[in-house]
Length: 232
Image (cartoon, rainbow, N blue to C red; front, side, top):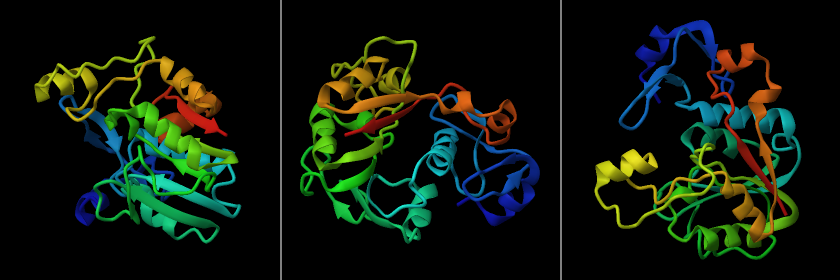
């Protein structure tokens, strides 16, 4: 969390974090290398993608209303405590390295039974995984038939094909090309087709297209960001 003094100083009514409903006169800058201004919520520390996902889950899905068995990979801090408190969810978190995850697991070799979860959240994870095909196959395996998932990734929609190059080892070069030094690829538009090849039905949801311009500005969203919603 940001310091209480900073949060109090920034309080206002120009922008709103939909996750906790708090208003601010500005958000904070954030980014690797070239920082983006006015994107990090002072209260929840959410970014554009987190606020967009919250709005989508709240407005368009059964996530907050029906009894669901949920698997959440590398849970984001802005969501973790809030999702844990939801009485309708049987909520499990998993990560290979995080000490706060319920289950320590490799996404390419999950310890869960087939057809286990109604909902899987796996956001900004696959770009870190060398064998993303195996990871996608495991996600498909543990999802229940009729279940759904949201698999957000950093994506260049101007790029038709995903790019990866293991020969680039310099951290600065990797950060410049892939967005972060620890990303192994930059996904293009073919990301959705790869998910389909695994067996998922995929909806490429531009949720900002359904929102009024005033809401996009108020919540500091990235216009045109695609939410990959998958179904089994």
